[in-house]
Length: 192
Image (cartoon, rainbow, N blue to C red; front, top):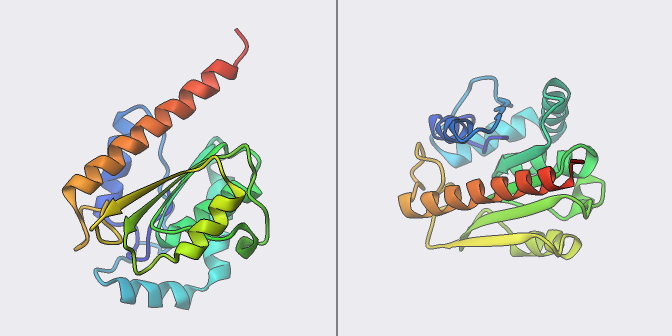
């Protein structure tokens, strides 16, 4: 689970804990080495100072460290990292993007059609270009797009000013149901 531009916040860590309580193994790589922000613009400046290549390398390092992970999630800035791994690493069978999406070619590859995909975005969202979502969905027609009307960009994170309890609950319900579907699909493909 890759964090957004504010860093690995208490809100994202709490979400990871709730997913763990539901029986999922969740890893939370910290691309900022413990630094967090309360202002998105400050967080974006920090990410720019780190650099795109360093964020990509942090994603690949997390994939090497957690070799059993086969579902990847990303929030805002972290959607690039999640999508990169879903496109590049064959073991990933599912990808959830919250607050962002990129055309597959922007990450130097193509979308793998066998990867289950969900995209969650605020509606409207000043940080997300509809054309980028459309470009990804063009290559992943099986994907599910969820919009959260009137919500702020980081509506799912309890530690942000954008937090919206109703939208966050709906996001979490959808995520839990999606993960259960993925697990069920995996079990149904296993030999008896």
